Image (cartoon, rainbow, N blue to C red):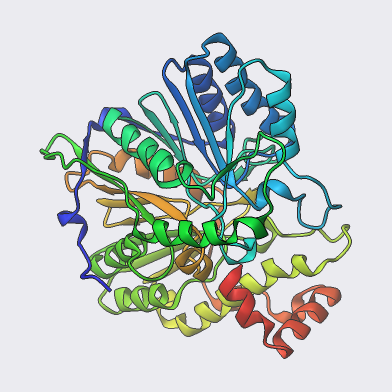
Length: 445
């Protein structure tokens, strides 16, 4: 393991605070993304876990295609996970997945757009493309959201995420260069808009080589001096436990906190090193806020009127993790050193991630801060160092918006126990715990 670099020693881009914007809703994110695509003059690069074959997904893909037809020289590329794009939704009937839509669009239009399937591992359960970022011309729109109806609030429900817009040519160039050279250029990455695709089995040797190259990859950052009027931003990428600079910087942020930590995660299943650093922070007097979704705001939650499936037990398993954490740290909850905030807003779901330390260092990321993100998936993030707190008011406004739909848990007793869950869910969880399958699930989900 290499020596950890503190964020003060990393190469950075100098960002004008006036060119950094925070969007407060999924609807505003959708509107901003579509507007940027429609106004693009040079390039459109979209990287996401998936672009879904539904109304919102087709709206985004149509906007990109229409921009390409207006301007055939427009440089457009879309990256999605190879496995996720070629299957249907969990629990749905077997299908060709979203790739069928990509191929239908390519046949329909004169000027096609490549939609690259990125295979991080030979099996989806052991790693996916979780790298995020929408780069349009010189603007980076960064969010942990994927592209479908619920993430883009196309219909009645939304999945709440975080949405940030940064206008900076060199940062945009760096992120596009990584997509082109670090992913698209590799022989394992294939254009899903074309037919006659190889099977995953046929790609196995190339995928192994690809993952090995990703483990050594990084964003190229031409170090810029950051004066008192600017904010330092460093793009980071990470895959696997070893030599993972993204994981290291999250750990450094926690270990260096002096006053306050705000941690967002949609699935409460923190890696051991994160749990350790959080506890150490509380011991040295740091106030810790954990914002997590209520089990009913989890994207795997199944309402009581829906048929019970094994996947529906996950939100309850995460709540059991959270309750165990609260029990172990009850004294810090009582003293106010630890605050757990449960997010819930009607029938909507919660997908927020990220870390804010001492109101001066922020990690914007799609990383769920769980063992899967820590060891399996390809993740990225934007590390923001803002010692002069130019962005403090913007982030306070963002978290005020987040907190308006949270409830603070004063004691572990406010969280449900196994006996409180629906009987069918109890049976599923008891079977999982009895067979110790929960240990495996915590590593891969």
